[in-house]
Amino acid sequence: MTPVAADIKERLFNIRELPTIPVLHNRILKLMDGGNYSLDDLSNLIERDQVLSGKVLKLVNSPFYGLYSRVASVGKAIVLIGSNPVRGIILSTSLFDIADEKLPGLWDHSYCCSVVSGFLANRFNMKDIGEIMTAALLHDIGKVLIRKQLPEESAEIDKTVQSRGISVMDAEKMIINVTHDAVGSWIAGQWNFPPIINDIIAYHHKPGLCGTYPKEAAIVHLSDIIVKGIGVSASMDRAVPLFDEQGWKNLALPEDELMDILSEVLDIIEAEPAFSQYLSKEKR
Amino acid sequence: MQRVSIDEVRPAMVLAVTIKDNNGNILFLKGVELTDRHTVLLNNRDIRKVVVEGRPVKREENEIEKLHKEIDERFVTAGPNSIVLKIRDIIKDLLT
Image 1: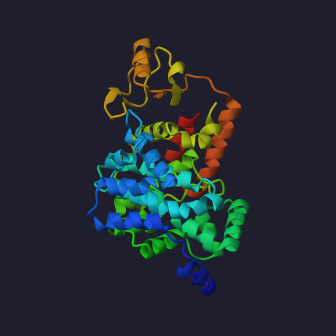
Image 2: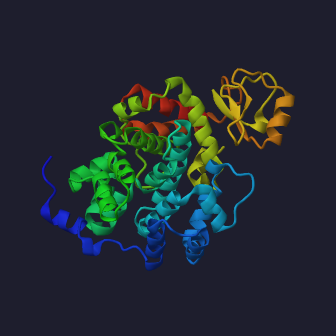
Image 3: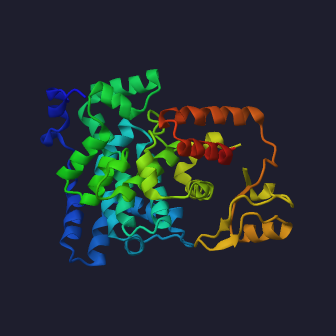
């Protein structure tokens, strides 16, 4: 692989141009980092931001949590889902506002991956379910940064995906010689994400190579494949990623359980109204 | 196998996938032959779709073909591994 061209590197990793986290979001993150906060403090701050509150409530009411009655209070939602997914929502909101414009559907895809990763993490009895869901929400954050910092090259990437029928990842390699998993891991480092989240972002296409969190990365990799396979993806980014054999082996999932798992995943996806537009073509 | 809605369930259809409720408790095991009594219970539990053996409900052939082609195209980039091809084929069955 030829090295990344100096000017691309400079524009992509220009810290001054990095999207900033809004002041209110920063205050919430700092409060959570301190560890010593009351639920009221946290929910009061979150409630000041409608978009944020909306996303927290949407997640807690998603079919993954399988609650019988709708939750309408942010405070109750935090008790039910824990603070880690809340952190993921805050971090992704800052970047995904840009993404919605430049890569329509990426937020829905990421949110769907997060819900499916939560289901799989539960199935595999993982202990860090919240972190895995957060990482799934953020797994494509590198794509957002590439689109923001390199608009001309991004147009070229989209054109190449269309004309050659290849994945965004392969087109990134061809056009800018750096891929969104590496870019995402870089921004995760800049924003001091915990190592588990950074590693899952870095290895979501090659979980078999992940040293510390191979199973966690494999769960997000498998979710990405399933969710894209079902069709919940950005319009310019429909191709299912290359399957990682070693990552699959690390999951040690008996092949004959695939049907039950996929059928349950489809029930979960269909129960969420936000995803119906992606399934409408499939509806008879 | 075929994923059918509860209104499409007819007696003698056989469950291909175990049905669980929202809390993960098993309601009916795969292999069970469905009767009207099952349908009532599933409706009460707000279960909307089930997976049954074979392809007992007739669907529009053109639509199936179109959708299968679309899913095949999505998976071209996923590589030739037999597991991912199995995932593709199950998705094709479940969505049509």
